[in-house]
Image 1 (cartoon, helix red, strand yellow):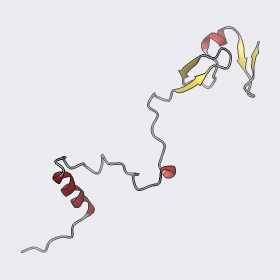
Image 2 (tube, helix red, strand yellow):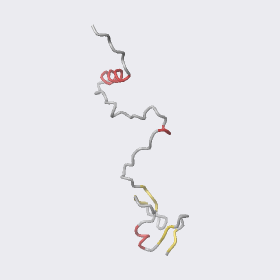
Image 3 (cartoon, helix red, strand yellow):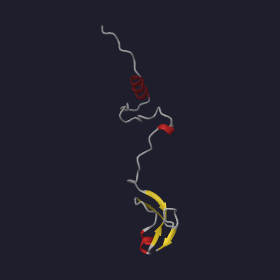
Image 4 (cartoon, helix red, strand yellow):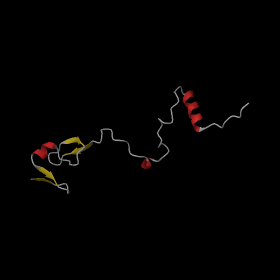
Length: 91
């Protein structure tokens, strides 16, 4: 008779999942950062492909963009520019 190997945390998790009627979850699907405090976890991946929500300082339009400037295309067509200080000038 072979000696029994010690029970691991993964074995216990599988037993608990089986007892609850759920299929066991692979460790590759579980959150690898679950043991870390929230401030040390990496930020979640952007859901909108790198888009950010901005408010145009020229007209107040709220829109999503991936551009560096916060001016909307309509304000840029009107000739408005955004200074590094955040001030909007016509020019």
